[in-house]
Amino acid sequence: MITRLRFSWPWFAAVFALIAPGLSVQAEEVAPRHGASMYGDLKYGPDFEHLEYANPDAPKGGTLTLSAIGSFDNLNPYILRGTPAAGLGLVFETLTQGTLDEPFSEYGLLAESVEVPEDRSWVAFTLRPEARWHDGRPVTVDDVIWTLETLKTKGHPFYRAYYANIVEAIPEGERRVRMVFDGTMNRELPLIAGQMPVLPKHYYEEREFDRTTLEPPLGSGPYRIARVDPGRTIVFERVKDYWGADLPLNRGRYNFDQVRYEYFRDANVALEAFKAGEYDFRAENSSRLWATAYTGPAFTSGQIVLEEIPHQRGTGMQGFVFNTRREMFKDPRTRRALAYAFDFEWTNQNLFYGQYQRTESYFSNSELAAEGLPSEAELALLEPFRDQLPEEVFTEIYHAPSTAGPEGLRGNLRTALELLQEAGWEVRDGRMVDADTGQPFRFEILLVSSEFERITGPFVQNLRRLGIDAQVRTVDTAQYQNRLDQFDFDMVVATWGQSLSPGNEQRDFWSSEAADIPGSRNLAGIKDPVVDHLIEKIITAPTREDLVAATRALDRVMLWGHYVVPHWHIREERIAYWNKFARPEVDPIYGVDLYAWWIDPQKVAALQRRERRGAQAAEE
Image (cartoon, rainbow, N blue to C red):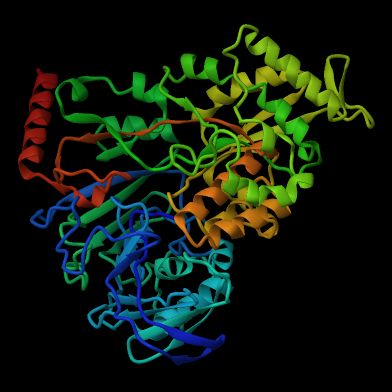
């Protein structure tokens, strides 16, 4: 499952006998439901009035200004071409939507109800009669069908993999549409179908869907685009007659009259702009900046508030990613060797102020992370492939290389050298070369943020002690994205976020098919039939226990494949914001819902008084 702040899913009900794709007869009906979860009960009942972390009496008004890095040249976020602007999810609606206080639940948004048979071979949605596009026309079954077909054929390659098991969408009445699956047991598919954004067929009849555009698109969401300054600013305005404003999912949310994104050249410029009051809210990812840069009169006076909010979501994997399409990185012993050159302990102490923990799982901070040696359930999945897997998958607990021991980095580099020699490398005249061809071991680490240069630099120095010539290249956002889409890199820094209920998105992350699809998230180029098999086991898991076992097994195989040099994670949200907001008493456990906040006029007035006093003092 993929989680987003605004995009999600719901369900349960109805039984149909499937004769053939696109051909069915109706059997005993089960009452449609307002929502559903993957394996358990819903937190919110059919008559719930609002989310626990939203205030239904929150006032509307004011502007929320946020930041983005780089530039943009496209207002269609569903295609591969171009760089889409930030915030476009505010314009579009999905059939269903999840919450930030449940691990895997979905509730009707465009759909008022969902029906799912016991075998989950299809899902049916009944659209809300009041659902409207911003031009006043109703959201229709034809829109849903057209969207599915278009995303699978003309959309970003991600959608082809994500919706691969949805065979077709069939109209069954004025407001009811049924999506038929390919027969693969996939408990998540009804939820995935509900996550689909619905786009207006009539709008795109006169436009080319797969072309970049700066024309504000037609949507059905709580905001529409009010102004675009290409590459610099995009402003969204709240739709005053938004059809879904009073839905329980939305009550007390989307309180700002405007949401504005200002673009900055890089993260350092963006931080200084924040401190100068050019935007309102910042989630900080840099431990150095969090420890050293948030100082000054605005902080001591309380004009800017700093908070660390614990969360319970998985932290996924971040790391230096090897492009195994490159000949130099095809041997896992080579990849493992280079991991010994990264000194996390020194980095954490000297660059991160001791704020991070080492990541040792693709599903870190969750029950999905592999623990100890394989369980019986995991072994049942792994044993048939024993001859295709490293022995360590069965006999060792994975730990990222550490310099905490008595020999420190020196011992790690000695181990790295031994592994490189096993993989066919040798040192000649101080340079690491291919023992057969004499070609030097040389590669480039591609970055998009200058902030990461200070972290990559010591890693490069340690590689040079091994005789490896690693160069760092930092490029602009557009060039970086294009090179990632085309897999035109040796090594990059990447992050894969994970939900508590992984599913179809794992195909886009790791599958053999995705490795050859430009724009996929399989940046490492993994082509492993065992990985493919375990992905399908995750997707088709009939119970939560089966899902956990399959995910842990995949985690082990990925870790011992040495596709990344693992980085670090933190279990708190570090946020900074100008003291102009109020928010509900309850914070959701899986992240910050900024759209449940609102502008507090008294706090705004207090900020303005401080600014006036500061200006007067400066004049005197």
